[in-house]
Image (cartoon, rainbow, N blue to C red; front, side, top):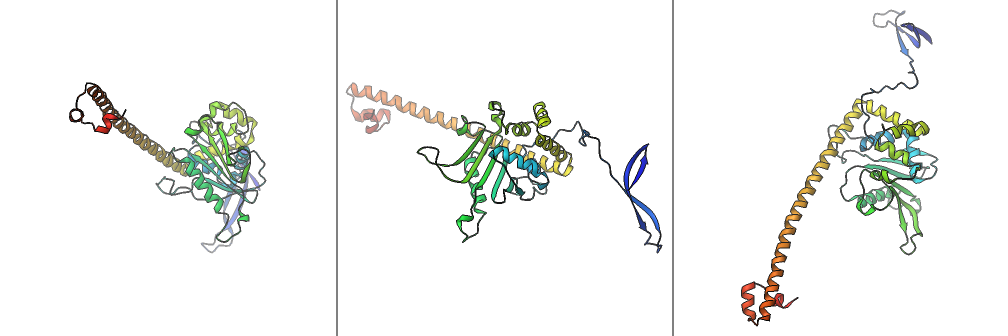
Length: 336
């Protein structure tokens, strides 16, 4: 190891001699050197004016929490959600999306891992509200659970399996519940007796952050996911080393052009899909209103005819005449 002086500063280098084999010479005739440069503390490689990618984009979420080199922050995230110590974590390495396509059928976007050597766990960031999230959650949990055994294996090989779902929207039927809910199979008699601890599902609805009064362990992650560049998140990073590490990791991801391109494609796909869903809902609403008005008008006319028919009956007008005038049946006239 030698020091190289550049612009008045010394840098540690590693010089290596090379032989001139091309022209048959045996003596070294050129040098290469590797520079070992460590930036000063606090210096960021990322352009200050460049905005960080949103960790709520599901592929960015996977880049952040799905790689083994980031296992420390993933382990801490899991611990803060399930509220128990995780001794070991092994992340399953699955591919990102490829090419110019960005729909979720072309890649595994959720984070999959095994904790404590036996418990499979799936972590997902869900941005699109397809109105089928409950069935989707159960479907993916069942795949996670069944993946542990092969046909003919003993059921005793099945272990507790955990799904963690972060939602960027609220589930209508959970409106009155807290931001974080844990779901298991419990008795309908006392609500306490658990049939089995094998099924465990955690749902975190990010938009409920304003109703999150408690300053629990999960709050720092919600703040980070919602706004990684926010002042409150930065203050949290000063006290929580995992949040600081998560921010730095996100900065690195945001500075990678290839990963940035994948994130942009995915975000465009998500925005386009949201727009399509919104258009479909608006069309459905308009159609529903139109059909409702038509039905209401028809029912109103029919109700009016019934009132007229009743008065005609009171005036002792023949039933056949009333049927001919109103167009109502005998049953409709006599039914209140």
